[in-house]
Structures are given as C-alpha cells and as structure tokens.
Image (cartoon, rainbow, N blue to C red; front, side):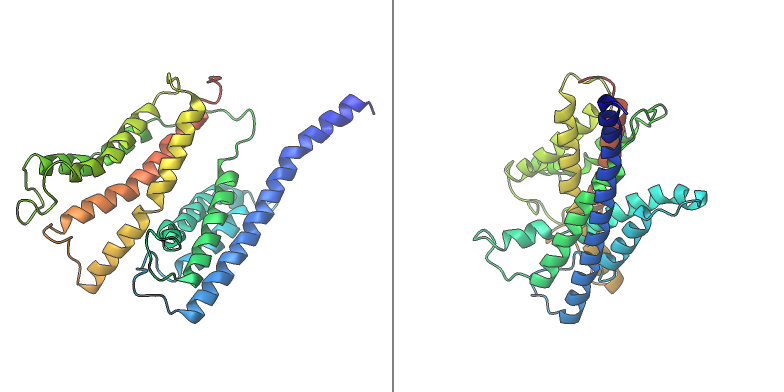
Length: 293
C-alpha cells in the first residue's frame, strides 16, 4: 500500500471519528443534564427572584429525546427516518432548558447582585453545553449532498416576526396608545424606542439571509444569523412559558399600564422568530455552500 493511499484513507476516516466523538460527548452531556436536573428536583429550594423559565420535566425530556435522536440502530430504516426530527426537537428543548442562563451568570457579577440558584445554574449550563454539541451534530452535512429544494421563505417569515416590537414601539413613541391603558404607559419620548433597534437589525438580517449571493461575506452572515438565533432562543421560550403558566393559573396580566395581548404578541413573535431565523440561517448555509463567499 502506497504512502499516498494510506494518507488518503486516514483523511477519509477523520470526519467519522470526529462525528463519533461528538455523539459520545452529547450522550455524556445528556447524562449530566439528567443528573443535574435530578439533584435540582431533590433540593428544589430556588431563590424567589430566579423565576420559572421552564417546567421541571423539561431537562429530562430534552436529554432523552436528544439521546434517542443520535443513537444509531442499524437495519431500522424507519427509525433512521425519524431521527432528524428527534435531533432538531432535542436541540430546541435543550436550548429551552438553558433559558435564563445569561441572567444567572449576570447574578454572579455586581451588575445583578441577587441570589444565585446554584442547582439550576448547573442544570442550565449542562443543557447549554449539550445544545452546543448537539448543534454541531445536527448541522453537520456530508459533502456532496444536494441543496436543491431548500426553502427560501423562512427569511420572509423571520422578517415579519421581527416587526411587531419595533412597530408598536414606534407607534407609542409618536404618541399612539394601542395596547396601552393610558398615554405614557410605555415610557415618555423616544428613549424607550431605542430598545427596538435590535429588532430592526433582526429584520434586516432576516432579509439578507434570503439570497444565497449576498454582497456581505458568507461567514459574517452565518455568524450573525446563528448568534441572533441563539440569543433570542434563550429568551423567547422562557417568556412564553412564564406567560402560559400565568394564563393557566388565572393570574395573567400585562405589564403595568399595558393590555395582556401586548406581551402575548411580543413573546410569541420572539419564540417564532428564533425558529424562523434558525431555519433561514440553515437554509442560507446550505444554498450558499458552493458560492465561495
């Protein structure tokens, strides 16, 4: 066997070895999530200021679905066809289980000097780490796979879902009162409107992800797309869960001076934007793979 052939053969094995290592790492992290969540449930004395970002069963479900999505059963074609859905579902649930982690980390600093829910912090950190590894697995794509037929409408959906917050903020800044119990309930002047700038940028980013041949560098758009998706995904599910929990308990109400439909609109659009933006970024990633940008 020639040296060139041996080198080629070894190079072909490398992706498989990397993928296998990622799978075992993800499985180990799923075990860590279950262990941390179990300890958290046994202790279950979180500080009153931590808030409820997810139901107690979520970390267990996320870890089990993630594990099922990456365990390979040779010879079961029907199982193999179900695995992609399990992987994406597991990834979403892991991200949801990690919701609130940025706030927990800020509580470790002088910026938010509040009590830290240490068991919850460990569970969220484990879930976030598992989500990062799982993202690497579900986003991996074998060379030569055709990208024909990849949907492009996700960017338009993300664009529309980014608009409710800046539209209402602009209306309020101009003196309008839709969703407000009284004028000024959302703040006075244009200073509160500045909070809508990130969502205006999100709307622009959504449109940039539609075309596979943008003038901006491909890596820049992919980085911006995945980063924005991750940030909003760490907020939207928790906000929606908190609101749904209040609705079920019958004590739901909007922020002071605002109608209940306002947070419903905002939180729902944030959750859906994270999903649409993730799909738009993935679509752009596949469609632009051969552009050389």
